[in-house]
Length: 170
Image (cartoon, rainbow, N blue to C red; front, side, top):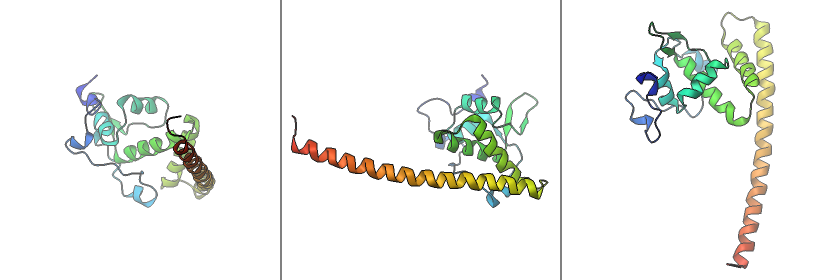
């Protein structure tokens, strides 16, 4: 493994202390914000990993599965990523804990790509927009369900606290 690719991967190191580190946004950029992002490849894989807190192996895995493709490679074979690529990885990081399959992630990323493609057709954009709008509605419904589950869990925990307080050490 090349030293550039090992950067920021050891446990206990804080990427914030890495020169040039920029705290990643809590969520990736979207829509109009993405149009202003520099698409020129500027970052090696280790720099990206350190910046967003993702392992080198995860980035390579996402490449192997077709979720991301480095924008370029140096003459020495180093993967080079643009800010657009970094934002794509942040989107993947958000989808992963939500239980999306790799195939579903590919579909969502493809729809986002269609929306951002200045050469895309209006029909393709409408279809992608419709699918993403449906997904957004599903996510909002899931948030409502989770809020209800959280409320029930809070009430149950409170009830258990009361029961345990009534019979300490029993």
